[in-house]
Length: 64
Image 1 (spheres, one colour):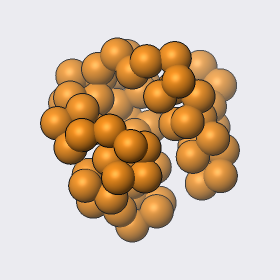
Image 2: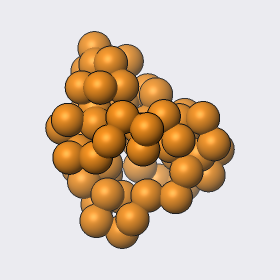
Image 3: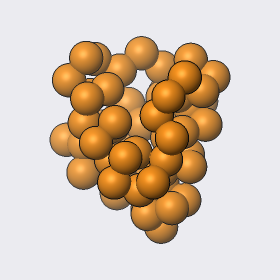
């Protein structure tokens, strides 16, 4: 999960978003974004799908 938390931070930086912005875009709570970034979290399958779309749109490599 270390890779996920790094990618979430990278996504926010590339978009110029605060954690609150990503939470709003994803339709999740701020604490959820904080958990993903701090602990690597465990997003739901749907959240992973939406994150992947955002990663690809921001030019972030999604291959692991």
